[in-house]
Length: 519
Figure: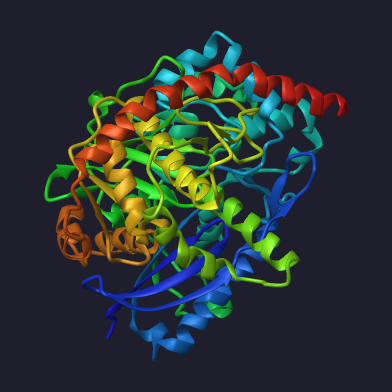
């Protein structure tokens, strides 16, 4: 009896395979760390073959937990980390390592392209601001600076596309990643003027056909079946990019309500669902527009380069100091204290700009030299004040992102591990001035991929039917914003904006000193 669906989610730090029953209840999970390599030149890469072998391992581990997994699996859906460039040759072999979204080497090329006259046309067609994360920018940079990296390349894939290729042998990509990088979000197809604006017309053949996994599946191949322990011929659906699958599973659209959704993960993703004609394109040419696996809807997004990475940084400082003093603590122990520290600390006492990533910021402004910092420190501030300021900085960044997209949606759904913090939920609700809900579902991204497989194989007739069973019952009650706290954050937001705008020349001066090697 085929009574299970598998969702694969290959994130930046971990690859997960999750088994669900046909009604959306999670049955079992298996995970493997997803490691990548970085170098001082800004590169962030990952061997393609290792990513596949790690993915296959999660499926074998899942089979150890679920009796007769192979015989019971009705379909598989796969999603993965977005952006990046994963090149393969004619035989399907990797051409070098995959460039991840974290790779910053194309920053100079991005600055040049964004300054050109053609970039506004590219932006208005894709709805997406160009940044160094994207495949278009990375391919353009390779053409200009590292052309040897393209030798032998026949197809340019993304992470999930590579895994789909290994699962099925098909070279395809989905509507979300194809269109925000190279296409038109209104038609869900490639756009020649976008490809030309990136200087990539001569590489047009690298781009694979666009496949909507809601409509079409391919069978699991014999080699992949041997690697994973699953049955050859099992239908496999190509999911949309992980951000879309997570938003789908977390409740971006439920019961016809087009809500907002914020994913507080390694990055911060802030999005609203809207018909294409409701997209508001900002003057700074930032953000993303991504197709949703729902007719007539897209997700408009603004994305912070760093989300919980800021929290990890401040807690790592504490852990290192305590270890140096002979009192080592774990990250989880410190996380358990954050709500208590925040609750005991007055709000809005400091400004923290959460631009901790070495790649700078991409939303709602693009600046590769942007850096994190505290504003307003005095001798009375202690470590808990810094922790609270970091959490508030993430909420201010979310508000900044929503402001660039128009009115804040009437309700916002929070997803990501940090959303388990009651204080973070309260801070976000007050900062946005909107009620927030969370999903009790632990693996929203894998669930979104499995939902696409469920609709593709006829388990559900439509995606709204699937959402009614898989998403709506898992939403928590709405948590209303505290009015007094909202007033404090209304007062904090203008100086937060002023500080990040005023510090631009400081960031640039610091970057010049790093480039020249001056102290």
